[in-house]
Length: 209
Image (cartoon, rainbow, N blue to C red; front, side, top):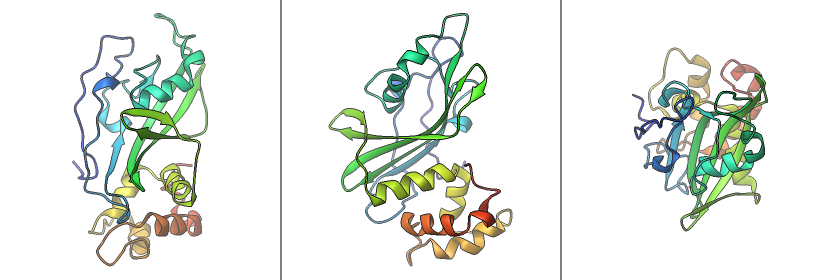
């Protein structure tokens, strides 16, 4: 398993579509860091790590979790779901957690799906104050760059940029990798943002949006 992912195994509940218990969803410090200011970073791929349909959110969750805040954002739509009829889903893709200026940020990438019609990819930015999560409406240049990088890249692409060794299956990423690294090998989110924006045609096959 790639070291970018630190997985906390989660037991499924008996709810319809075998939903995850988001109360027990906790991140751990990972081995990827974007720059020296990010003292904590963690990436989780719901689509890979969650079993079966657990990447689908069809009901509200505990408000004290990032996923719970996201579910509350769509509480009205989720309330339309019945035990034998699901008309609205939040499709979870991946989650990035980083500490920016001593504040923990959680970016969740997802789509919404109603009557089998999916939206474009969305990103919600959450922050943690003491033990409480809330949706973050404040922004700055660093937050926006982090958000845009996460919007366009998937977990594998981030890992390949971070990885010390070149992967022959990703020649375009290998060529650009020296442009996004610091001298100590740390992945710089600002440099990565510029490289992605300037090379979108070359990287198109890897981009998610």
